[in-house]
Image (cartoon, rainbow, N blue to C red):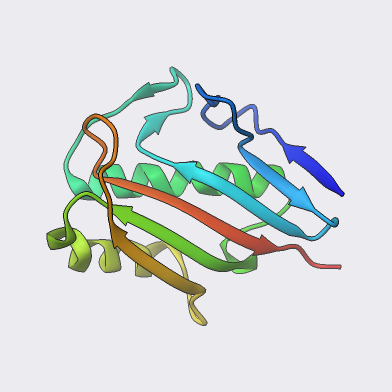
Length: 127
């Protein structure tokens, strides 16, 4: 019923959670990702665009490990420390995802350390 997805290319979780869980063979739940370097597992600070691009790439690595892509994503949750970054988020989002865009929720959140953005998603794999 639940299969953990592990990508050797993605950031190794530092807490007790899976990178992603595949449920019932088709629904993929990707854990929240931030601006971490997958090679060092260290946080990579930077401006909002840099952190957003790195964060979306980290999610993509996990999607790929499950045999999925952004085209399979049906729901995205975005957490921002500052909603003033909302317009720039939309720019990065349009560069990475394509229409029809997944359903999305964007909220302001208190993230750890210098994180400016965190992203998680749900994807449905093809039959």
